[in-house]
Length: 114
Length: 114
Image (cartoon, rainbow over the protein chains, first blue to last red):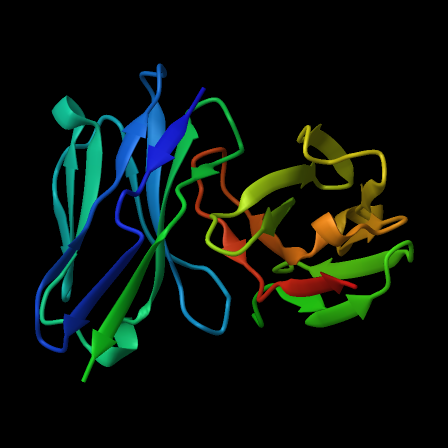
């Protein structure tokens, strides 16, 4: 069985602060894929990143960066210099290599105050 | 490419009534997924189509729920004899690549059962 834990229910920061969203996963599969999605108030989930289990390289995309560590089964997401537009619910998801179906965490609500 | 669209965006119904939702995926995507999302939770998988074939259904999908994807294009999700516990956001997603591909989500249909 797959499990994704996002222990932070809600995070509140002031604009320009850096913030890290935690994601811890459990799986017995050796091949799997990890995702982050953003769900703004409009409701539509937006894909941010996919990482496979064999690629532990960290990734940076603008103000976003991701830290994948298999040793701790974590796939954390950092937003540098947060902006009000970053306010949303962020979901981490896990998909086994042989499955079409991802398991989502419960999400972390990020509120960025001006 | 207009993305994944869902109709209606909101539906209010009385307990015991039947409702039907529609999802139009991205045109070239052959995979289509339905999810249910309740407040404070991540999306929960309901069912999955590859072209017109329904390949997997979650145990969450009781016999009151039925989904179709005629001709492998749009899909419908019908809920018969709605119950208050069916109140949720119903999300549709589509994808093109193999099992590790990211999914593109629609804006969802919010169902309220009175």
